[in-house]
Length: 421
Image 1 (tube, helix red, strand yellow):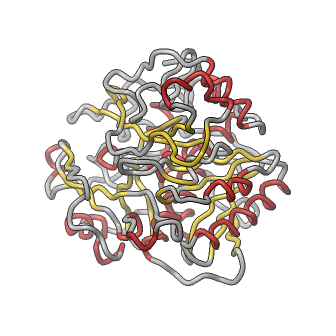
Image 2: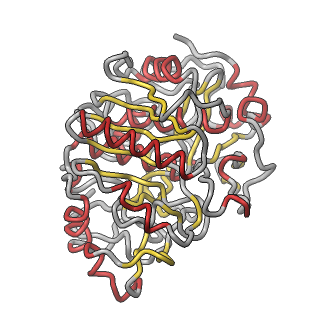
């Protein structure tokens, strides 16, 4: 199905009508060299009164400058190739292009250009639970359109289910975009896994943790799997008393490390895999992949309240007996972002909200991380070495992301059975 033309109308005006309230410019002055700028939704801005009470999303939206596609030798109205991006001429990530970059597909085509590659990641089993706040009424239809656009298996009542953690929550436009991002990219990386979208009554931590409990039950009943958490907030005293929510046997938890300086809980919990961000570099004319570097806006650092887990013993001198984040990373820079569909529009999104479900999907499809998350992470840290990211570390921690045989930034290596790049 040909997507609606609203993309050409909405993005040049920053998608304000569709997404609700956005910051006029990114909070950290993040302007992209590709021709455009980054907008931050209200749901991703932590207010002082939210501290320790309410979580925020971790996504940002990239808004291309008008005429940008023309500069890339194409047009907004050029027909998109089947399985490719919804509008030709842009070099933002599709399931096939990201799978190509991270060597999750075969064959791996040179350049991995989003406008030419169409082979998607495959595999997946058991379940992935996405925990988010508020109700997303068009979840099934949006995931169906996303899947049809990129040639992914269609969602059905058997492999996709929306579950309320209590009564049906109210609708929130900005959180709907978060939920779209999470379910679509988990499905993109593990198209054969069952996806549960567990909706909390609100973005309060009490409601979200209640939803985590529901997710635990669902994933356990499916035989195990992953829980993806794209939300978080600044650390607060007493956070350690909630870490037990992320300790269900047979489940691996992935939590976004945040999109600004500092650390986020529950990313700091020693029971989760903290997921940070990178930025992909592509040739501005051909769209060919050139490299991957650290995303400088990604959150991370030593925790104030969480003590050093055993699996980080090899970096104890760096973090001084404090839990360090992030543990791993994937593409999160909105200026090198992902295509996401949320009725009635297509968007280009980034942030560590992307990286968490991407990692959950990759690990689900690979079956690489064991249920014993801490044991698996101990192996990761024990084998860390010099990062192969060519410019900068894979996060603000100056070594947390380094590795030996693991491609620790991007998700390659032992977790997905591909080895280093």
